[in-house]
Length: 226
Image (cartoon, rainbow, N blue to C red; front, side, top):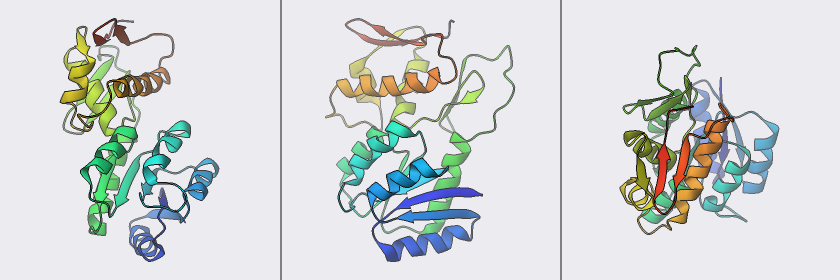
């Protein structure tokens, strides 16, 4: 059964979503307070988080990096705020999807299943002839040594561009401006932060080798050589 944490201070909406998702074989635990939500995340094994942005005590955009400090769990932002900046910042900070309210719960179910198919794909034995990095552009999935990397939208964009230029350097500016999920007004330093997160996820599979290498004064290079 899929286990979901909903951090949402609108109790009526939370109840509607809980009742609907429960009918689709999902177990729901709700938190109206972001601090309670972060506490629950350390106490339970969730598959996904549905996160509101307008929360008491802490804005949802501030909650995302706190979640990322302790977990790579997929995050769907559910928000009535329609500012494109909120969407970009949310994805940039580590969210996987953004759904503006109001929305049909049926679409939410589809989004949940799509994300979990990508991030929780079944691990298979590594084919010795398989490349270290394998990209499935249709599913927006990148596998490393046969295991699916749990990437946010921004992380996928960056790693996909590095993959396209494998063994060749890519500038920070190119990574910033050609990503669909990073605001053009963001700092170049944000690229370094995202690269660091990708490296950490790769290191969970292989901590002995460095596959994303800095090119001084230019940017980064992805190598498939051990």
